[in-house]
Each structure stands twice: as C-alpha cells, then as structure tokens.
Amino acid sequence: MVLGTKYKFLFSPKNTTLMAMKKIGFFSALILPALLFLGMQWGGPFLWMIHIFVFLLVPLMDYVIQKDKANVPAAEVSESMKAQFYKLITFVWVYVQLAVLIWGFYVVSTQELSMISWIAFATGMALITGGIGITVAHELGHRTEKIEQTYSKILLMTVCYMHFFIEHNRGHHVRVATPEDPATSRKGETFYAFWWRSVTQGYLSSWHLEAERLKKKGQSLWSLSNQMIWFQILPLVFISFFFGLFSYLGGRLVWEVPAFFFIQSILGFSLLELVNYLEHYGMQRKRLPSGQYEKVTPLHSWNASQLVSNFLLFQLQRHSDHHASAHKRYQVLDHNEDSPQLPAGYSAMIILAFIPPLWFAVMDPRLAEWQKERNIELVE
Image (cartoon, rainbow, N blue to C red; front, top):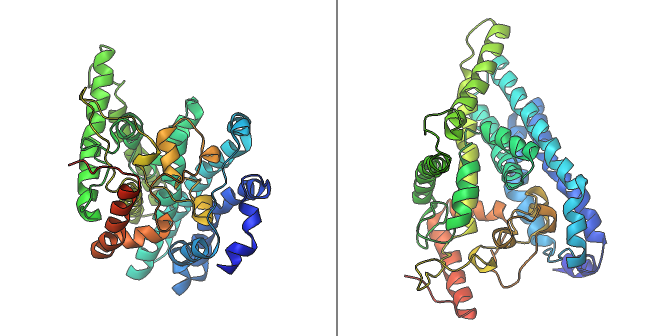
C-alpha cells in the first residue's frame, strides 16, 4: 500500500511518534458514544452511523494503514506500566458508559421509536457497552487495585455479565486452549454453537470456581461472601432503580427501560463471545506426560496488530502477549510475530464469524499453514 509505505518510518520501534500517537489514539473509543448521540439527534439513517464506523470505516482504515508492530522497549516497560495517564482513560470510560446508558433509558422512556430505530439504537448501545465497555472491564479486572476491580464489576453489571470477572481470570486464563475451557473455540465449530457453549458453561464454571474458593475458606456457598449471589442481584437492583425513577418521572410504568437494558446486555455480552471466538479459534495446548498441559505461550492466541482497531480496543487484539503475560497493562502489550496472525482486525473478523462457510474458508487454511510453518502438531 502506498500510504503504508509512505509512512513506514512512523511505525519503527525506535520512533517515538507512534508512542505519542497512542496517547491520543486510545481516546478514540469516545467516538462511539458521540456517533450514537448524534445519530439519535439527527434520526433516520444517521442512527446507523456508529455501525458504519465500526464495521466499515474501521476495517477500511485497518486495511489502508500499515500494521503497528512497534513494541515498547524493554527498558521502558516498567515506567510505562506505572503511567497514570493510561489508567485515567479507563477510569473516564466507566463514567462515560454509565452516562450514555442512563441517557439511553431516557430516550426509550420519552420517545416513540420505530422497530428499526429500536434495533439501531439497541445494537449501537451494545457496541458501546459490549464492544468497548467489556474490553475496559477486561483490562481493569486483571488489576490488583480494588478501585480498578470495582470499576470492572460496574461495567460488567451494565451488561449483566458480572460472572465474567470470575470465569475469565480464574477459569479462562488457566484453561485456555484446552478442551476444558468454554471460551476456546474448536476448529470447525461455528460461532453459533460456540456462543451457547461458552455462555452456559462459562456461567456454570463461575459458580464452581466461587464454590471452590469459599470451600477453601470454610464458608458456605450460600453466604453473603459468595460473589456470584451478588452478581445476580446487582444488575437487577441497578435496572429496578432506573425503572422506578423513569416511571415516576414519566407518570407511567416505562417497561421500555428494562426491555432496553436486557436487550442491549444480551447483545453486549454476545459481542464479547464473538471476540472470544476469534481469539483462540483452533488453538490447542499439548498435554504433558504428567497429565498437565504445557505452559500458555504467545502461540496459543491469535494476534492482530491493526493500528486503528487496537486504538479502539485498548490493544486487546495483541491477545497473544496478554495471555503470555496477563500482568501487563494494555499500553505495553507486545506484537509477537511468531503468534498466529488474524488476516484483519476484530471489526472485520466479527462479520466473517457470522457466516460460518466464509469463516472456515478463510481461517482453517490459515490455521493449518501456521501450524505447518511452526511444526506444531495438531492435538487430537
């Protein structure tokens, strides 16, 4: 690509220009709430602006602009990890998402929307709460500071998926790329089959993991120390409050508010499952003679270093390094050339995942070729 060649110098690991760009680029997630707000104000086809941006413009920009393969130098990783700027962005997002969702309650409780407008508005909200919100919740949920973990749970509460906090950290990261992991998609498995398996088994796994934790502490499963109990209650308390508030203000029972909340929640966590489907498709760790699985490495996750979509997703697409070093914050995640590489960023790959024949036609040969190049045996 001419554009990529012309600006190739920008993407050198030794050039600080890209690093400075990223400080601004990570704020690009705020484009999505702005597009949804403007779309609702202008109405009609403008309600689809957020969808066009995510699923058309972002993949187009990813294709035109050269990949970002620059990594933070090892000597600077520690300092960058401590930079408060990157933490601040994620904190700001929590309040932005809450404000946008509450505004959404106001819209559906005060405006008569057509079915098409409802679909556009609910799916647009899910791109915010599920596409960006769960990504931020994922980042914060890996941290040890209480405030960050609390913010993670708040974001997950807004999509009724709080058990992800348990299952992802204590389940998925331990069992990834094994048959025991609900969130690892199998080769030849459609997204639709994966969705049901991951959603149901992931939820049940969360209860099991929490029961094990409580048993070790000598506490009852049905005690108030059980996070899973709270994770069921809190989303209901949250939406009950706003159902009551907007019903009082509107002088009627606004059933549109809880309906909108639960619809966008299902769509939001379905986006998460779409991303799960992409990230580990066909990846398998070998079982050692001891019965344990080999250590998780960057070879067990698909990597994508498209610049624009990584700005939006806080470098979630550098998923290979995340699984190899889960303690690393998003700003210092590395591109790993040896990892299996997705042919496009998540926005484009999500569309592909909706069409199983196309997905298999693109991904299965790529998976086989990568395994052959790395001399990796397919685990049966």
